[in-house]
Length: 547
Ligand SMILES: [Zn+2]
Ligand SMILES: [Zn+2]
Image (cartoon, rainbow, N blue to C red):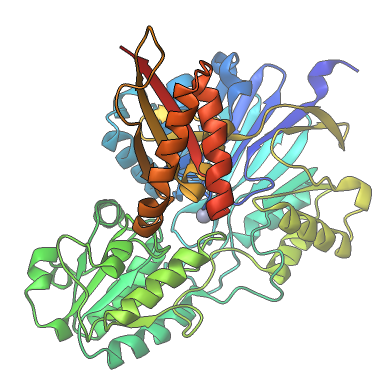
């Protein structure tokens, strides 16, 4: 059998984690990329802005990439696009809203000129090299999301990125069941689908349930209402706008990404807000609090976001005041629970009433739960199945559901990023492993921060720093003056008063005792002294200049 008969499926992101979704399909010399997302850093990844997939595998194959298809406009699907374009200048295909959001992102980074963007509507198909890609509409928490039917010489693939089976979505446009049935009729060789909620029994509630919950909040709020969500949760923005109209409040957006996304979505007709309802933020801040709703980002409690700053009392344009009602209309991303909870407590302390998803149905997931996942499997009837989008536990659970509805065990593969899978003669095989890890983006620098650096940052943050600067005579090796000591994040002022003279004395003894490997000796002596006294271990650095 020639090597060319195989379809290679290369998961570069989103398998074994939540976020940075990116899947590569390779057949012969043609390569198709689906999604290029980012992931937000976990608590212990200090100073990291976000994480992009490791796409080194593609670097020497850039000319073979026939296209990049993006399923929808969420950051975990579009966020890494400019980094991918830096190395892989392939044409991008997306539905109108997704394209608009990508355009805005590229323009913000001044790289729009580099991209070749193409609009494809749900229901259309495109031929990209050997791949025939059919886009069909799916419901999610952002309008204009699609699933993909990908016809390849090795078989028909259904790539189901984020979706839910909402019969009453905000935009009135349900998932295209007919297309799924039609693909199924043709015989689907492989289904890949979203596992995010595979641990959740039942059906994900419709977006519709949020309307009445928002009505309750709007009816009861004695003053301003501040609603936080993701800037890309366009459907939620629509619902808040609708509630504002119903309760005769003016609506203002705060934060660049929220303002930008709302503008794009309105321009393209995916967000309908009457002109007279929208007011600029400055105007809203000067109006009767009972007539105003503000919508902003920061529902994850990130310290740099508006909600983070409001909770800390450091927001520039406005402060929280008693009588405000804050609505966190999202669910904490795993790992963010702590910062969300901290932000809630702080805002309560400032006198605001805070409503969050544990106490009112002001958020529903955009992802399919178990019954929807089983319905999809039954509808598509795939010969083979690979769960995507989720941590290992969610992928495993999704695999179990597939077994339950009759996909044979041997036709299901649970793999994580970097594990190549091959589809040949209708059967799945494991291929080789390639790097599938994290590439950290920290300000302007990409990928220069390795795990060692991360561990050092962690240690610095956890245990503090102890710097000793020594001036010694280059001939005699004797100290010129007292050692200078700088310490941060380690000693309280009282401890410093007590311990630092002792540390200085010990250092002088060592140096003046003639040890000329003094830096090392001093560092270890100081470390053990500090440990004995405090039972803590800071990072100790000794610098020695000779004059
Ligand atoms: Zn999504
Ligand atoms: Zn996603």
